[in-house]
Amino acid sequence: MEVARETEIVITATSPEGFEEAIREGLARATASLRGVQGVEIKDQQVLIEEGNIVGYKVSLAITFVLGDAESESSGEDLGVVLDPDEYRRLSEAAEELEDLRAYDEAVMELRTGEDTLTPWKNARVKIEAERDELRRRGEL
Image (tube, rainbow, N blue to C red; front, side, top):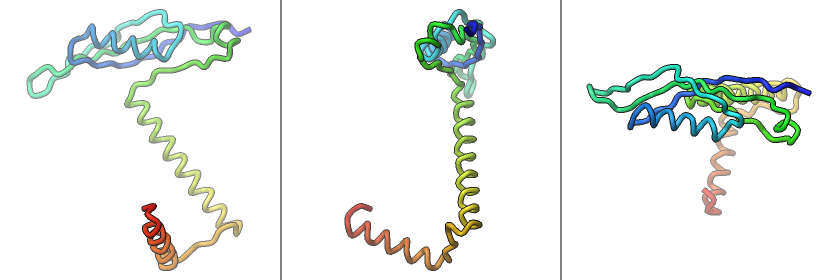
């Protein structure tokens, strides 16, 4: 039996209304995705300014929650994690790049093993244009 352990993640939240609203927003995001939230520590607060005017209030929150409790593990429920939007975008871009690299490696391997052949651009272009014309004729493009 695995013992539950406390885990901490840091999330950021922003509000144009004030720090209290930014904290509420961050806590709402955390509790929507995580079970067992036990505490929030305010790590940082920033006032966002544009052209000399306050445009927002940003907080960094350390969210403490219980990970791996026996009840959720035995029920087969999924656990969730909240990511900062910028970190999520960075991870998504890295996953797309990895997918592109795998597709490239697979194409190179197919060429090397003879499963596929290179098509000269002139031939490919003619075939692509013919396929587009056919799709346009059928009203699918």
